[in-house]
Each structure stands twice: as structure tokens, then as C-alpha cells.
Image (cartoon, rainbow, N blue to C red; front, side, top):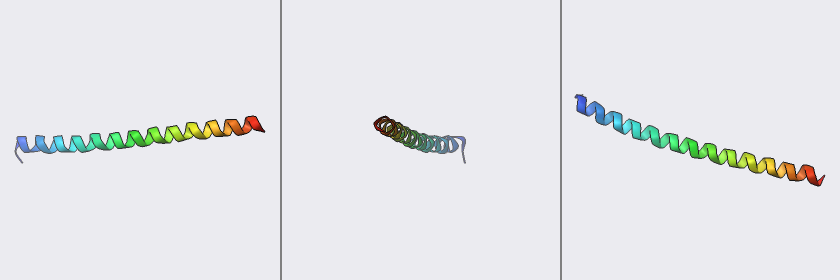
Length: 49
């Protein structure tokens, strides 16, 4: 590998890593949203009882 080639590989790996991080973050956000939803639902149920 030349220096330039290893930089190109590093860039591609970095991009993959970034994409992966975005996926993970959006998953975490979705999980957080559903947790809030569950909390809201259980709150409503506890109020109605």
C-alpha cells in the first residue's frame, strides 16, 4: 500500500463508521421514543385506576 492508498482506505472506513454511527443513533432515538410512549401509557393507566 502506498500512503495515498492507505488514506483512501481510511476514508472509506471512516465513512462506513459514520454511517454505522448514524444508524445506531437513530435506533437509540427510536428506542427512547418508544420508552417515553410506554411511560406515558402506563401513567395514563395508573391515573385511570
